[in-house]
Length: 484
Ligand SMILES: Cc1cc2nc3c(=O)[nH]c(=O)nc-3n(C[C@H](O)[C@H](O)[C@H](O)COP(=O)(O)O)c2cc1C
Image 1 (tube, protein in one colour):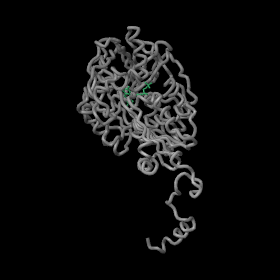
Image 2 (cartoon, rainbow, N blue to C red):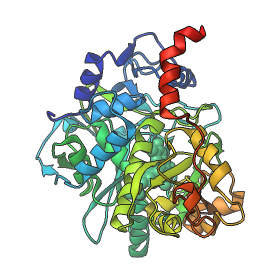
Image 3 (cartoon, rainbow, N blue to C red):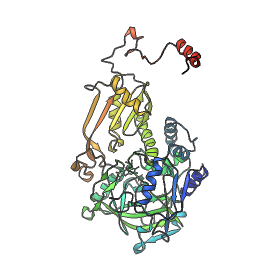
Image 4 (cartoon, rainbow, N blue to C red):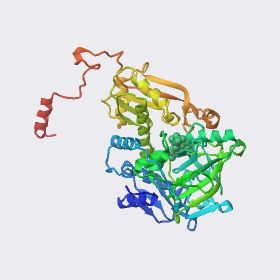
């Protein structure tokens, strides 16, 4: 795969007939997001909005979105055939992640074509949509990498964290102390120093899928592994943070350690499908913007009725990867497949009683615990975990509700999880939301079901879905005769 930036990725999509340019004039206030909603439902193309009201003459005039809206585009990102199965996609990512590629450092790059500092900084120059009518302003950070540097190790960390434009040079953010940048922030707070931050908009899509998932390891190296090409990094203008040299736009700034500087952030229409509430939260004061000529802004709509978003297609694949890697690192045997979503399902070949609880303990003992995926189901070979009906079906014949539902109480979770009582979602107070997790052990319980000779040494009665093979063959042969 040649070195790929956002423009090369867009060209790839366009060549596949998977990119639509919208030249009609559209309003950033609600109209763009309603268009995206409809395109999500149609599983439609990536979109480039080229004519946005009020942005005819701003330094960034165009918005790119929905680049990862379908599984086939996620496969394209990896250079795989578009119809590669979910399990194969997951395995490809896992294999590539085993060989992280160190970034290379460069002295200059297209992102430095324009440098704006001081009073010239104006975030309203970016064509940021108002994604939902009740959002507290224009959410600039929806699908960009937020990069910080650990002051002890000097390691860059990239995550995806929401943020809104509060004024020309201020961005209010949702920072959970439990997340990587939250841990870095607490180090700066202890030193009494502002934390440098860089927001990267528009680059190779592999960075966003890695940054948006709780991967273990440096995100730039892992993005390099996924794109099979090292990331070319360049230093920011006002801090030591490093960013991709061919990014479209980089916003640099500092987050004060002082809680008296916090400002109201939210409401924001969240991935949960509800508005996340307004609270006083940390603020990034912008020190510099660097951007390419004719810079393309990147954003994404979350919080749709059908749950269809580009995050579902891309980040949920990465979540399966992260879970599988977690279980592999814990050396838990027998994992055959994993899918993540409202119900996260792990398919196993069961070789001992207690294996499902061990899996739950490993997953909820990992970084994944801070995510709004709260139901984990463990099943065996006979269940198609990619079919939600099969997951419901297996509840009927495998789950004994008095033994197989395990609630992990008072545990960390996500502040966007609206099941959780309002005050327990205060992420700055508790570090994360205080919530509970559920394990559904839908494997055959060996204590209840010893093997029985009359069932062919199986633990459950034989399955009755089939006729004898010779009858199946007979019916096949005579099918036309039946007139059906
Ligand atoms: C579109 C999108 C928006 C997200 N918004 C937030 C957010 O506002 N705050 C947050 O803590 N995590 C958010 N996340 C989840 C983090 O990106 C995720 O936890 C990631 O693992 C963070 O990296 P870290 O584990 O290195 O901190 C979001 C993820 C996506 C895909």
